[in-house]
Image (cartoon, rainbow, N blue to C red; front, side, top):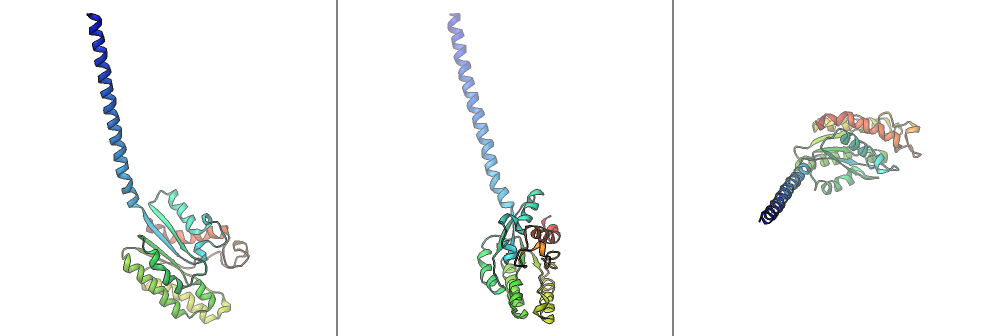
Length: 228
């Protein structure tokens, strides 16, 4: 009789243990589910920075990880800031071509817009008034679709052999546009790099990997306060 009672107690213990394990499993599942539910919210909090420009932004002649937008992303990641960099650079891009391409890139949400266009216009000697109109049109399209987006303009310069007046008008175009549109201005993207042979590739136009590190710093000092 005693043996039967002991056997009965043993069976009950096993049953309760099984139920307990089942409850723990359910609890764990609920915990995992709650984590999964939060994941999309974290993704939704991520903001986009679009760098829209020429081969200087694309990182011509460099590994994509060496281009200055990628270096900006590295800095952002090191600070654990919720921003994703989108490199919208394209080699050979003129302001007119950029105007035709911008709508496609604006299909994704944009929180910070960095415009780096005009250099190829300048090297081709295109009229400054034409470049100004194209850049303004791009700015207007971004503002129209994302009125809350923070705007940044990268200033450029052309060699003096383009003519003193043209070089002056071209250089002054950028601060004028930035002021008109209440944009932050990177005075000269190639500051401390342009005209320095060791920081440029053989063509004398596109920065080396070391040169792009300086470009990244030129950009960072202007945009860092926008990331707070």
